[in-house]
Amino acid sequence: MPVPNLQRPGFAAPLPESADVVVIGGGIAGVTTALFLAEAGVNVVLCEKGTIAAEQSSRNWGWVRQMGRDPKELPLTIESLNLWRDIDRRFGIETGFRETGITYVCRTKAEIAEFTAWEKYGREAGMPSTLLDSAGLQKLLPGIAAQYTLGLHTANDGRAEPERAVPQMASAAVRLGATITENCAVRGIETAGGRISGVVTEKGTIATSSVVVAAGAWSRLFLGNLGLDFPQLKLLGTAARIESDGAVPDMPVGGGDFSFRKRLDGGYTIAQRNANVAPVTPDSFRLFFDFLPTLMTSWRELKLRVNGQTVSELKMPRRWSLDQVTPFEAIRTLDPVPHAPFNRNAVRNLTRAFPAFADARLTHSWAGMIDATPDAIPVIGPIAAVPGLYLSSGFSGHGFGSGPGAGRLMAEIVRNEKTCVDPAPFRYERFSKTAKAA
Image (cartoon, rainbow, N blue to C red; front, side, top):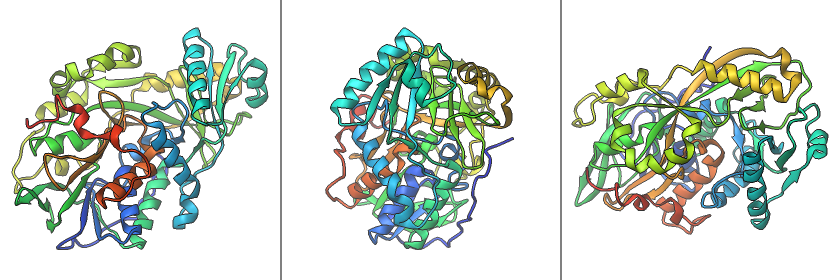
């Protein structure tokens, strides 16, 4: 069965003739950008080709964490977590956020070395991260298997409900004055005098001077039609929902080959951690050397596969005119087939780590397309080659947790305000070897 309980409020506002800012994409990056722009009184329109949050923003694990993040990304995730803590009160919504803490558990020398090193960095950064020995693990996570001899616990990390969080944020944005329209694909942009003058959608044109591309796994294709080569590949992440009557922790827990998160509906979202499918597509060859360093260090975590995505992208047009039907209209929602062996492995590995899950019953399984960059850091900022064009994409599996921070940062950049964090690590131009006219 597919993703459970996705809220679908329905957004069908008429397309206005003009807007200060047009946001392309209804995932968490686009919705939070629209939310903070609307809160600031900006006339913002968000266009979503399908349904709000129907792709990876509702298909992720629901973890909201700082722990283990890249040092370049950590300030953004800290800012984002601060926003998560107050977002329900601030906007009168229910995202399901709970500050439960998160724990990683280790059983191999490599895992122990990795998280011991990160604890030192986290401590220096002022985070409440604590290393736990076997006794500490048993106290915090009763019933964990004895083979886990070390853990890293961050007390102020948390969890939220992906299937409700982004639709709730979108509803709040509309109440603040944003216009959101679903089933409205953006075909491209128009320019005048060297800068953006409008956005062309399947339903008409919106006059605007600022456009934020927050199209997730579709961003590379959209930008490619503008002559911009954004180095981004798609990874297929698989997850599942289980039910269990065992007494297990409420906080998210991850090991080397499993993860779980308690859900508000009573079940658990689980996954085989450090396991994704990398579909072999034409972009796999075009971007081979961009991603080669990542492949060399992470090859154990990837399964290269020729699958339906391979065939789909071989047939998919890469260029179109603004009066043509686009791939965004042909495929409203990416709904890939989950990799069933990963879910079977997740249940088996989870039961080994926590025997209380021995009665686990799998009720749903699903997959989503993760938008990955070569350095696993998103782009959040302007694209200098096209004045008025901004990009918020490439979150590499971290987008749900860092989404509110990314939305606030992008809203501040568009408004030319002082930013909540240093935007330099997220510059598009850091990909200077590939960020050029195609």
